[in-house]
Amino acid sequence: MKKAASYALGCKVNQYESEAIAELFAEKGYEIVGIDEAADVYVINTCTVTNFGDKKSRQLIRKVKRQNENAVVAVVGCYAQTAPKEIMEIEGVNLVIGTKDRGQIVEMVEKYNPEDGVENHVSDIMKERVFEPLSIQRLANRTRAYLKIQDGCSQYCAYCIIPFARGPIRSREPKDVLDEVKRLVKNGFQEVVLTGIHVASYGKDRQDTSLLEILRQVHEVEGIRRIRFSSIEPNAVTEEFAKTMAELPKVCQHFHLSLQSGCDKTLKEMNRKYDTEKYRQAAVLLRKYLREVALTTDIIVGFPGETEEDFQESYDFAKEIGFAKIHVFPYSPKKGTPAAERKDQLPNSVKTERSHKLIALSDEMSAAFLGQYIGKTTEVLYEKQVVEGIYEGHTSNYIKVHAKSPKDVSNQIVLTKITHTEGEIAFGEAVF
Ligand code: SF4
Image 1 (cartoon, protein in one colour):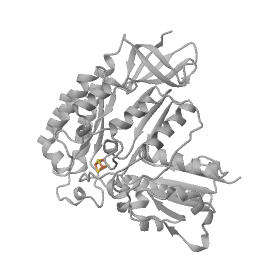
Image 2 (cartoon, helix red, strand yellow; image 1 turned 180 degrees about the vertical axis):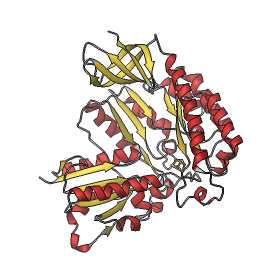
Image 3 (cartoon, rainbow, N blue to C red; image 1 turned 90 degrees about the horizontal axis):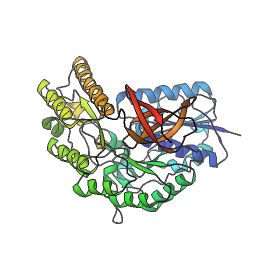
Image 4 (cartoon, rainbow, N blue to C red; image 1 turned 60 degrees about the vertical axis):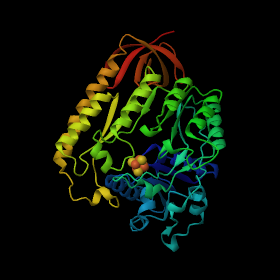
């Protein structure tokens, strides 16, 4: 039996796609093995969101070839899409595929003849208008599943290469989304995370659906207990959006609302399509309708030209909004983007200092957010046992909980009393 390994670097969308690719190989009779094991085929789904992503992708390609020099190495994903020639030059690469046509990957691998050298299957993603139908069955009985509903991005933020790696927005057929949710329920999943490159644009390229419409339809699927979005943009949060979230009880009270900067000048230079006032309104609306809502966000520090005052504005705004967690990213120039061309790049020392300040704020806010739950009882969906008698799960508003339970609570929603917190984890006891 031939062996195949499929591995994703980077985001949840890549992880979803790598799992789908593994299933394509499994359907054709391959045994699926881990990326560290000897295999006949390695599929590496690359990330190019930062130059560091590129480096990690190159290192992994070299590593797998050392594991089996006769293996076929297929490189797919964002880095392959934006720099196929660079990938072709890496020793050991056999096939370069990019961010489309991955549905035919097994055939490409099986037809491949090493005597023909490296094959480049990358084509122009900017002309793509249809969502590539990759899907997963997921026979493994787990709790939470990522479900890709959308691909591409047409926002062109000044620091981001992704629109060139993924092409324009494409929404998945509503029927395919619903069929996959039903399959997931059948396989024991209780929670689904709607994922995409720019989820907020779901439906904008179609006449027959919208983000709220697909959400309502997923909500109706019997057996699904929780629904989340991987992230959402402030512009998507209208009064109708917030109201709908409150009317649909399976929607989790957690939104990752991208901010990137809390300074209007920087937001404009980043080519983000909202300002702090719009962001504030989105936060107020979500809090008006969802009492327990947790907001998390991403913030970039040290964007070109960001002055000390701009950073302070960003910091103060983050403090004003109050997040359950901030993911802090020191700005990293990405070749091919307008921001990387700017002459007013900041030194790493400044970026590091600003990162530390913002991380400290995030830690303070996380502790305050978690602290409110001490002594309270809340519902937790448990995923697994971490040590004998202790189970790990998440609340609807995405607090990670470790709780004692005399019986197995894996894959169940159980009322839990929170007793104390440590770092980002709340500890407690299941209540029966
Ligand atoms: S919204 Fe901006 S940051 Fe996000 S993928 Fe699109 S261009 Fe990149």
